[in-house]
Structures are given as structure tokens and as C-alpha cells.
Length: 156
Image 1 (cartoon, rainbow, N blue to C red):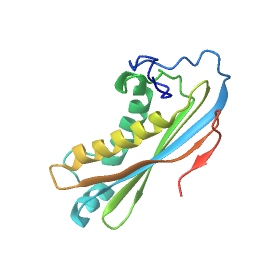
Image 2 (image 1 turned 90 degrees about the vertical axis):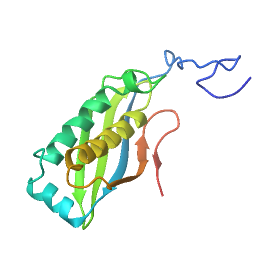
Image 3 (image 1 turned 90 degrees about the horizontal axis):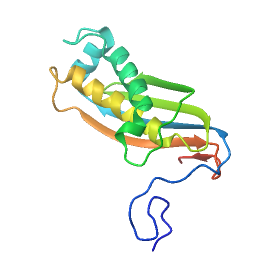
Image 4 (image 1 turned 180 degrees about the horizontal axis):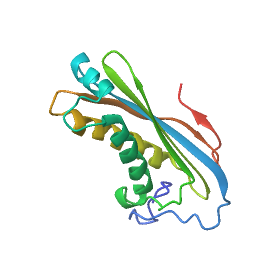
């Protein structure tokens, strides 16, 4: 019926069989940002928000989310990750999030990196929403992946 990898010949959803694939070193990096007022960002910078250290909590949430991606996203393989990092860059009215996941396996880690970035951003929102409800999460995207049959890819 289709050439889509997650559909069988009748169009039903299926988990892709990666059993015959070779294990390779793979990584993926995702990024996104959350825009907010300068006042809210200052509270995040100096830790004076009502819920404590926003960025430390968001980093842990992102790492934990990457480890649970197979439980959250239908048809994703549960993966034994080698590494997950979640980093932040603070601008004038924005917190930029960059998450990288890596492993040696038969399938890639794009969804794990995207999940880590997304949950880190959602956690920032949750931790700071008492200060500002109008924060905007935006531009969550894959920015790079390495390894696997399709090779390396980098966003332009």
C-alpha cells in the first residue's frame, strides 16, 4: 500500500523491525526556545522564581524525558542511551535550549533529542508560569544527526 516505514502493506501502524540493521554510533541534537519578559528572565537568572532553580530542574526533566521517549512516542524503540545533555543560553528575552542524545544502536536518537528539548522547555514554562503565563515556546526542531544508514544531517 505504501513505502512509509511505520505502516504495513495494509496501512496499519507497526514498529519498524531493526533486527537486521548494524549497530552504529549515532547522535542527534535538537533545539528550541521560550520567549518571556525581561522580568521573568531575570528571576530565572538569579533563582528568585517561586519554584526555585528553574534551569537545574529543566535540565533534569529533559534528561529524564529523553530516557522515557519510547514510553511517550508511539512506535519509538526504547533505547539504552549512552549520553544526554541539556544546555541553556540566556538572551535578553529568551532561554535557548539545546539537547543532544547519543548511543551506539540500530536506530537513531532524533526523537530522544527532540523530547529532551521539548520537556526542558515545558519545565521552564511550568517553573516560571506564576510570574508570566504568556511565555511562548517556539522553534523546536532537529538541528543535527549523525550516524546510521542515512548518514549525517545538519539543518541550514
